[in-house]
Length: 297
Image (cartoon, rainbow, N blue to C red; front, side, top):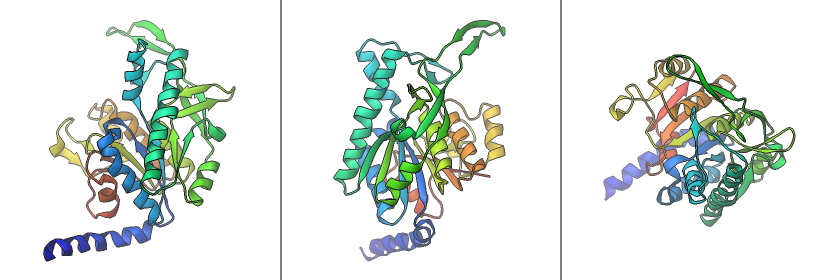
């Protein structure tokens, strides 16, 4: 028992220099995928609240793709993905907003408040936080390089500009902002945006100290699908090379690209970690070794 208590004390002492360094800093946390499972959510939310209690300013951007798909299926609305993006017509966009803003966002905020934090739910179109431009149509080519068709993504957009004013105000006032990845165009239309891209852009606008991507793998692998080859730290050049060689693929690509852009635009550190691990945020931030992959310049 004495040894266990001593080990716990050692862990606390290991975290002390990090607590001192990160006090008053802003951490942007992308929260999505299977890490949003109800059993995992409590640990992640409590980690976020602890960050706030010790003087760090966490800002959460959440996803919700699997729940959106589930609701679309219930309504017999077809989901089509092109290049990893959901083609979103007017009916689908209404479902996207309902699920992200009306359900998931409020659930996260409610749990933050339940466990002693002060969460405030926002959509990217509140106070024009996320201004967007509609994504241009893309051509789909066959194996011979011939254009098969041109795809209009519908209500899907790229981030044009972030206005962090309300986020700074809320953080400085003791609140934890929770943002749904919905953006507003210059003509007032709401659009679906990639949550990884949104998190990276918000981190840049806030001049965040860290951008942390919570996902369902424990980092970037040298050999795709092989956890034994997890990379503890990777440079931008190496990450780009791995994307080009298809060693980084699928849903990991937008996460890594967002990390790269964030580093190039002033965010000091970016992390990709497995949010399914108990207290993954605390282990990555406050221990010497960490548990995920850090993308560095």
